[in-house]
Amino acid sequence: MLTFLYYALMLLVGYVWYRYGQKLLNQGLRDENDELTKPPVGPIGFPLVAAVACYLLFAALRALVLREIPCVGKGCAGQIYTLAEHAGPYWANLFFLVWLVLALGYAMYVTVRIWTRP
Image 1: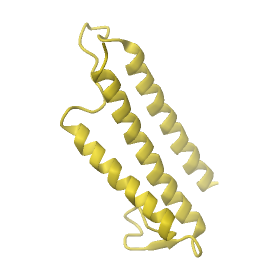
Image 2 (image 1 turned 180 degrees about the vertical axis):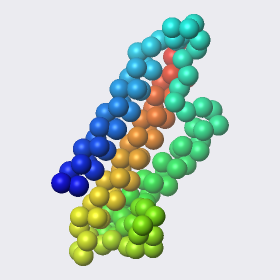
Image 3 (image 1 turned 90 degrees about the vertical axis):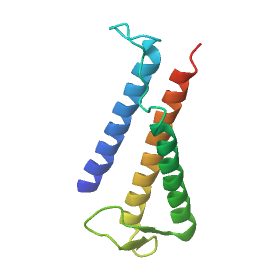
Image 4 (image 1 turned 120 degrees about the horizontal axis):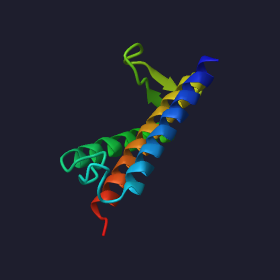
């Protein structure tokens, strides 16, 4: 039941993140206060978010190839989950990494779309 709750909450947060990005894209050049629409990532944060997303994507691809992933959390720091021994925690950590890559990639996509409006 706890695992189902974890995945359901992750999907719910992803849906809310998607709706927020769609709201910004559909808003137009200016909001209701006649100010320019601000993207979720600024010009300084964009390269930082891109670097973090690339690192997380590398970690996810490495986990797929090696079939082992370090624990993502404070309670199990230093522990390595392998696909053969700990399949559940392995896939949970890999899902979390992929979810973060998709969320950060979507934030960068929305930012670029807002910056390149005609």
